[in-house]
Image (cartoon, rainbow, N blue to C red; front, side):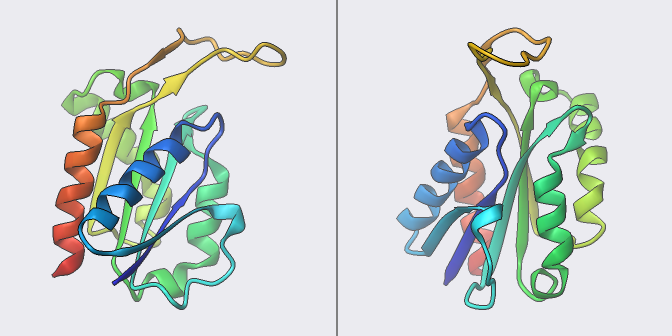
Length: 158
């Protein structure tokens, strides 16, 4: 089974999670490519696709939205999963999950997923340029991310 893990990232944290998801899937015997959504031009060779992006400024990163929209026809024919991260998931509560799920509707209504992973993100203020009004920190739970990817591998094998 050949799987694409495509990601959109603002500061690199989503890329790191995509790489971890790819690593877990490879350990399950799957052939995996991990790539930025902007570098993907052909999905025809993949049996499944995982799309990851953060929620920033109250919406899913636009590059991920465009990727799903422009590849809707192909994605609709294969299993698709999404993962998203953001400050809202610094604390994993039902209310925060519901909020994140509302932000993901922009893609889930186009291509319904077999699974969705929601995770805390990471933020370090840049030395130059615009800084977001959030505290610095890393809220990614690598055990949770690994467990989600492991469970997803089982779903994709079915």
